[in-house]
Image (tube, rainbow, N blue to C red; front, side, top):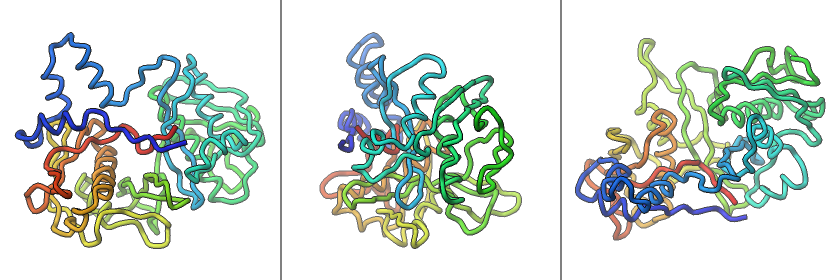
Length: 342
């Protein structure tokens, strides 16, 4: 199993946007071809990472690492109609020899306890009711319980027809699980990998990196609380400020963004984010890999608030950022998925 490095049409995008600032690269590439030109269609599909094989579906699954963080991973699963694909997604994160072997090379683990069966599932008006066998309860800590519930909810709500999840055990809806996680009502996405000391209504999701084996790295969505005035709402600048602060110490996460970096300004225009950074970011100018990681962490974080974001352009005090002999004034593509493995 190797990390899939997607290059797509990035070089073409860089050429066509070199003189146009924050113009959307996808729309520009489309404009190079006639409407019926199949080449244009193929290029755009490659950039968007769409699925050409009708027998497989790009599906995001939530595993956990050795530190207990949930990690989203896109895998291609056999396409089945109706509820079948949702059941297949859950079965892919059940603890089994096959599933363990499938993901162990990058140090991730299945989340649902071994031998758990999916006894039934219904999806109606955004509500997914999923009935597990009692093996679902075979875990040994409050942290495992919380991660299990979130992994199920986040995996299922990746599907556009599912907004919330009702967990059932042997045909019944329990009020709480073993360690008092309340499951009496349907559960929505909230607080994935929450790392702040106290609960808060003002929070953002940012992306840091993790590694288990020291060789392969993966991006981890982390929820952080932010301080806001009572009448102010959380905005994109809050999220980017939280990102450049770096992860709290002792969590085993890291960021390639140099310490001391701060956001001068950010502008999102026609699906391109132009981020103006302080001069501390210049510490990465000799490291292509670090620069790509920085751009990706910015892009994924922005995508939490702007799902249609297509590219990120990095500036330093209003001037183009250059990595080696390459200009980073041109937008760097935001990946469709945080992590993608085969």
